Image 1 (spheres, rainbow, N blue to C red):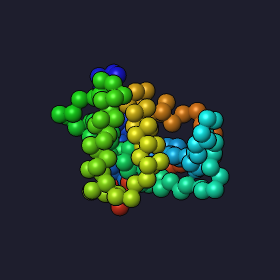
Image 2: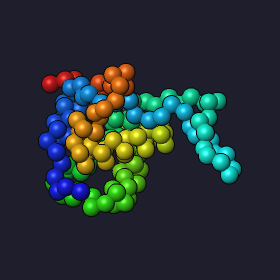
Image 3: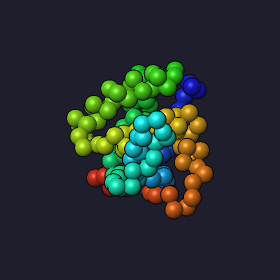
Image 4: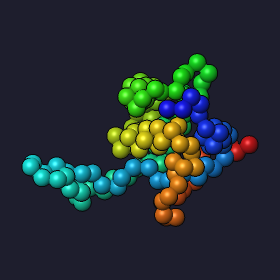
Length: 143
């Protein structure tokens, strides 16, 4: 991984922390997968998931905030990143959202990892217009 976080990730994080809207994508899948013994997994249409975008993005930005702290090094591998996320997830659940779902968790970690690798704009680029949203940090008035 590169040695420093890209400027557009820092800008997205600053905008988030200042209560300004950040252009992003909807995080998470709307259906779970069900396993078929001996076959390919299939979409489970019996349950539709609701992913709280505010909560998922809050966790994504929590991860990015941790990595931008002066004493924290960027991960050297995806395994290092996931090990750090295991610790950050517990902290986030205790401090902010105990009800974070597995789907929200995975989606937030995926976006944070991709943003650290290639930047915020490229991480959210390439989706249909219907997938784009604006997110803002809850409880913070834009400055």
